Amino acid sequence: MRIEFIKITSLFFLGIFLSGLQPLAAFGAKITDVRLWSAPDHTRIVIDLTDPIQYETFSQEKPPQFHLELKGVTLHTAKKEMEVKDPFITKISLIELGKDRVKLVLHQKKALDINAFTLKPYQDKSHRLVIDLIDVVQEKKEKEERLKQKEIKPKGTKIVVIDPGHGGEDPGAIGPKKTMEKDIVLKVGEKLVHLLNQNKEIQAFLTRRGDYFIPLEERIKIAREYGADLFMSLHADGSFNPQARGSSVYCLSLSGATDEAAKILADKENTSNILGGAFLRPAAFAKDPHLNQILLDLMQNNSMKESFRFAETLLGEMKTVNLLKYPSYRQANFIVLKAPDIPSVLVEMAFITNKEDESLLNRKDFQEKIAKTLSLSIKKYFAP
Ligand SMILES: [Zn+2]
Image (cartoon, rainbow, N blue to C red; front, side, top):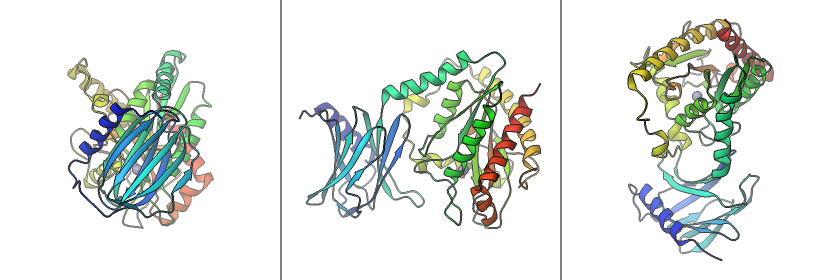
């Protein structure tokens, strides 16, 4: 058994660094749950804790395992040996070591890059310890496949990227019958991509293909790698008022929101990064120094004009399937709509917090109807 000491130290310090603002010597924390989300290129494990903790990490090469020792903590979950269906790990073990120490062992199928970090409580989420296991080879392959699409696309073909909002740790809005926004938008997104791909002149792709979280900035990056001509983020609205109903369409604003409601909605959608647990690697989102700011502004202005044109087409079609919350599109500062060179809109299909809308959103025929309407609007937008 060989242990990599360099990794131990670096990951140990990473853990301490990221939890540096929290009281370090917390004792009496409880592990209340362990959750797992599988993406094509990474797996995320989330450990729920009642209080902040200290931890140390170790990587073992043969067999490949990741060990994490949590201090000042006791187990309060029945999940101790979890066999899992996942592309990268087979089992998660939680072992009580005594003296308020618990060891977590991740049984890997192969060598992986590992990133562990803590998250503070937010809304209904408790303290969390997040472990991302990343397959860098697969990550690179996914990116190369996206980049290839714009090179091989036939002349005149339009690329559309559909973004099912939320995912993984971030469920989005939740209905009275516990329907989650993240599940509905993925179902409609899959149907929409299928419908769009029936057209010779359109190639459509999804930003996420399962129940996992992608940071908002990554979603833009994915669309740009595909060379998207149009980007559509799919959502289902939520409100404290159970009577609120209807569909709405949003575009980006660089100078304040159309109204307070649009601002509140954008703020809510933008918290997705916090709920989903985005770990932003600074280099990935640094500004490109080679991009000319004037050119960038011109591009952004043009994309926004196109987004408005598409939003109007979209509303014209949407009113045939559901009542509209507003007769025209609204604007606010949505992070996910900020691609400077891609016309982007965000669609709130209906209110998941309204009983009638929730049951509609759960119905396959309604999901198909919405997908058909969105597909038709996209075709109309591209029509010469
Ligand atoms: Zn949403």
